[in-house]
Structure formats: structure tokens, C-alpha cells
Image 1: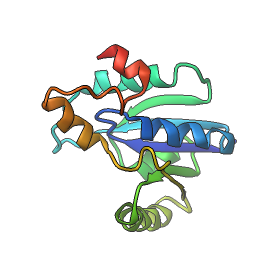
Image 2: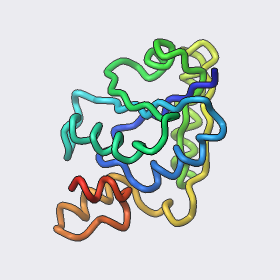
Image 3: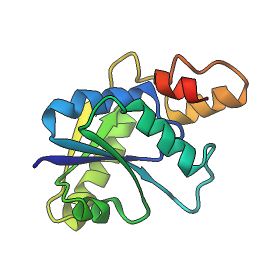
Image 4: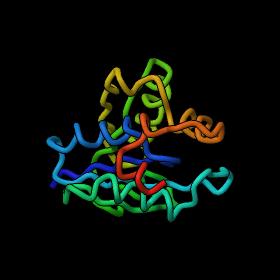
Length: 153
């Protein structure tokens, strides 16, 4: 079984995240959207709300599972029998970061492979960080969020 983990903080999940997962569905038997938590990071939405957003976004497909985890991503992948990490790239800066992390994960994850998908042009100009700033400014963010997330807000 080909299992991939799509890790992130998803604070909040965006249409860009959703697009990467949906485009990767034909490549894998199962994709685990894994909500990682960094204890030193302050989140805009609590873990429960972020999990609700992700579950609502992928409620229409049985090939996507949603879980939270605390350990290293490579350890979580091993626990879930995942041999792949799925990541999206918006630009060259993302590539430089992801290439380094991919090599580290391969070394410490017993050959764990990272699959990188290029973001669709209509999603590559924004991130969760930008969406949070727009929200803090009181503006409408529905353009950037999956419809089920907009409904939950």
C-alpha cells in the first residue's frame, strides 16, 4: 500500500494545501494529512479547530485520513507505515528548504521519500501566514480557504 503523509500546521488549511492533496490522490492509496504541533509556536486556531477544518475539507474522500502528531515527522511516518512525505512548493525558497528537509528525512527515516508537487499558479502567492494576517485585519478570506472551512468560520 502506498501511504503518504502530508505534514503541516495548517493554521488554517488553505486552498493551496487542499489542491496539493487532491492532485496527489491518484499517486497514493492513502494520504494522511498530519497536523504537527510545535510546543514553542503560538497558533491562531487551536488544534481541535484545525483538525475540524481539515476533516471538513476532505470529508468527501475516503483516501484521506486526518491525524495530529507530536513526534518527528519521520517517526510518525514509520508508525503509520508511510514511505512517502508529500509537500507542496510555491517558489525557489520553498524548494531550498524542502530539499534539505527531504534529505534529512531520507537519512533518519530509513529511506523515506519526499514527493514535491508544484503549487498551482492561482495558489502560489499566499500562505497560511498571509491568510492569518488578512483575518486579523478583519477582511474576508474566503478566496483563500476551502469552502467547508469558510462555512465553519
